[in-house]
Amino acid sequence: MHSTHRRRLILFIIVGAVLFYFSSRVGILRLYQGSTVSMYVIAIGSIILLTGYSGQISLGNGAFMAIGAYVAVLSQLYLNLPFFLTFFVAVLGAALAGLVLGIAAARLTGPYLAGATLALAVALPSIANLFPALGGEQGLGYDSGNAPALFGEVARFKWLFWISSLAALITCLILQNILKSRYGRVWKSIRSNSVAAELTGVNAPRSKVLAFILSAGIAGLAGAVLTMSLGTVSPSAFPLSLSFALITGAVIAGISSLLPGSLVGAVVLVGMSQLVGTLTTRFEIGDVLAQNLKELIVSALLILAVVFTPNGPGEKIREMRDHRRHHSHGGHR
Image 1 (cartoon, rainbow, N blue to C red):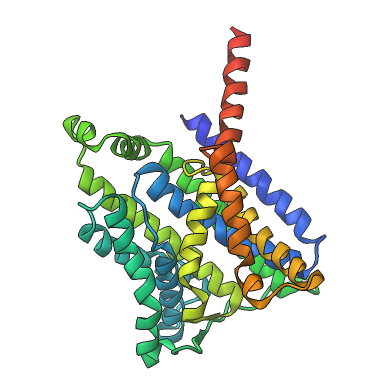
Image 2 (image 1 turned 180 degrees about the horizontal axis):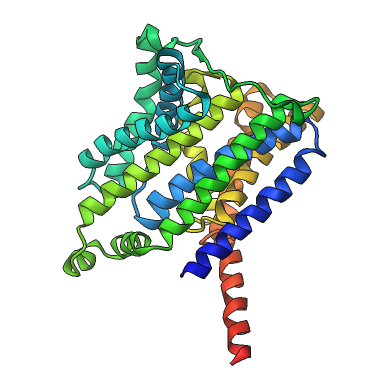
């Protein structure tokens, strides 16, 4: 087991080195897109934990992202916390909100749970506009600190890219270890058959609440990363469509595949934004179609993924990798 953890750590160090190498060889646009991909990797990871493993459908993780973002900004603004500490406070704030909602929704399943979390996602922007301390529609500014001089001419964008990439790498490493541990197995048993799991001694409501807390905390971190990239937080940064985009990205990539699933889903979501921008620039597209083109393309990809790879491309890749590993071990015997 220790060797498995060691291999994962080495792999993540190698990935970090590769990111460092390429960050010095790409322009501002690619660095910004890389930061956005990292944010989506974290956010989709929260969906994979909650829905893919514990079987709880949440349409409110965009709201937990907003809570984490506002907590990060407010802790910096009113408590003068250092930049990096605001990330930890964002995780704690969103996790606390997840605890409250998780306890309230512990006995809810399926569409009832989805409806409860959807209500949070719908209500939160309106609530944020009610309090002047939250900046209203204009929002509040966020200071991500000064970039070290070694980052060169595009210092700020490299700085943001590296912070977001580091946050994504650490999150994936921790999540991977949690999902492969006893907790992951318990959540899977609850997802498959909660009654049978309880007969074996599993406290299903408590385990579901724990999954909700962890998922909300991770989503809160994603919200803080997004706010760092934008330099501000406002209700418009966390629309209802964000929560649906996270679910779509997770399903397209494989709802129970953290890696490479979350990365595949993140790249798809970021790539769709660029594709839509290219199409609307080169072709004469009506305003209504242009505004909804991204959702149409992503929905089409979602349908294709469900038809041809029901568990998502990410899950298919993981199955092929496990199959090769199994045969390689068999060949050595």
